[in-house]
Amino acid sequence: MPPPAVGPTPPDMAWQQASVIFSGLVGRWALEVEAVAREALLRERW
Image (cartoon, rainbow, N blue to C red; front, side, top):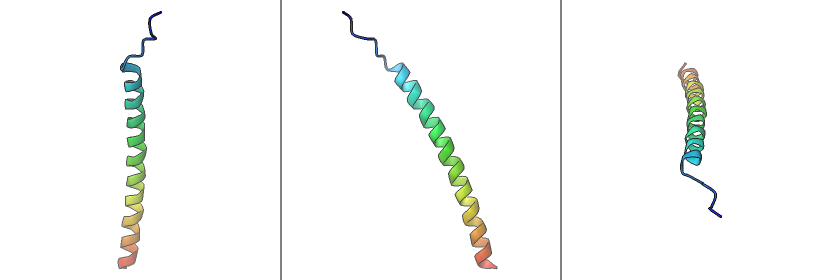
């Protein structure tokens, strides 16, 4: 019996998609945190 064909392509594609989604979420979160921090800094100055 031949071993099941487990090529590098499907896990690679899934990992790439997951990393793209993850980086998008992290980027959005970082932008929100930066906006909140900037607002707090402006409030502190006044």
